[in-house]
Amino acid sequence: MADVLVRYFAAAADAAGREEETVSLPEGATTGDLKRLLVERYGDEMARVFRSGSLLVDGRATRDEHVPLGARADVLPPFAGG
Amino acid sequence: MTATPTAARVAAVEPGPELTLDQRRRFIRQLTLPGFDEVAQRRLLAARVLVIGAGGLGSIVLPALAAAGVGTIGIVDHDVVEPSNLHRQTIHTAVDVGRLKVESAADRLRALAPEASVVPVAERLTPENAGRMLDSWHLVVDGSDNFETRFLVNDECVRRDVPLVWGAISQWGGQVGSVWRSPEYRDLFPQPPADEDVLTCAIGGVLPAVCAVIGSLMSSEVVSLLTGTGDALLGRIAVYDARRARFRELEYGPTEQPAPDSLPQPQTEENPMTDSITPAELAAMDKEGLQLIDVREPWEVELTAIPGAVNVPLGTIGSAADELDRTAPTVLYCHHGVRSERALQHLTAIGFGNVQHLEGGIDAYSREVDPSLPRY
Image 1 (spheres, one colour):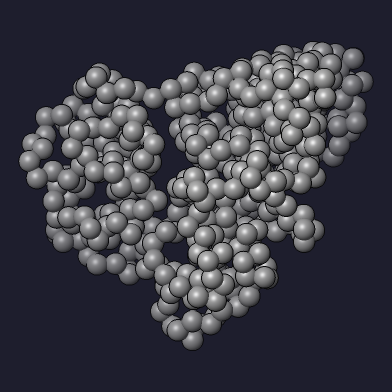
Image 2 (cartoon, helix red, strand yellow):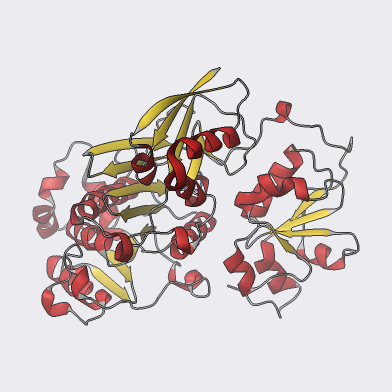
């Protein structure tokens, strides 16, 4: 198993009910695996965040589901308002 | 990714003339700041800064820049002041309801800083006018209220190598960052979200204090980038959450390219072709069997496109790669040739054997080959 520190921002923190947590995934798990796990755990609200927001793996945003995970993942919704 | 402190970079603004006695008196409290000297003040006085949006963020950024001595301030906004703006857009007052925001904001700035040159522009920024509107500014501040403008401003600033300070707010939170070449806003948010997934201030509400916090940080970024005092938010953003009373930072880098050793090897041993082709070369090419891929956003494709192209926005190229032909001759293009080059690097890295991208993008193609394609 590999541990990934997942940090949640704004609506992602609301969906998860926390600002960060360590998630354990099988060795070789990908961005797609992490998304599926978080949506399963936190439901539609998290799915909505993933539709509009970014998943960054060790500081690199990716929409590719096949990227291997690293030590840290950030879930960040974009804000439109000014 | 580890944090790499960036060396202080100074926007390309030459210091103006020596300070007058009046100016010394006016700016004495910042002239005495450690690390902020007379040359820094002269740079501010000579600087031309364009602020997009005279709303919640503009209300804080604009007076801060005028008061600090920024010499020329442009304001872009096409809206009028509404009663629902007044709880946070404090540059406007109750008597301004119904007036153009740029007019109301300009009045306030002129009162604060009579020596500043204020340029109100009551137009919406569009792909058609962006070239003209963003021309000749040392730095651009984006406090707009929609993603279309945010992506457009980012792309134009990156293309022109003009530093950009952006801030964004929603409900109880805000984000702020700066962009200068790379990494850029698109590295954080590869593509604009769908309209139905976007929460505007009108729908979700917004806490006035969030505008003040983020707007203040934006004005600090402007001073930092124009004068070279301190490290700006380049390659990282600050995120503020008013409900949890917490600031957090998020570091980011250019959008990940897959590591070469984890990828299938290219199917051709040698690629005798160069990476890029000119518009004339593309025009002369045999289109039979050619895979022409437009990596721009759908809204750009609606404006203009080269016939026969399929649209695969840059942010989706990784997941769409499986559906593309890895061996067919492939040409990528975008607006000006920046995004297509990035897409080319990605496709080459995952084993596409025969890929080129169009130099200068569809803009150059329109100028040099097919003037019937509208430019934007």
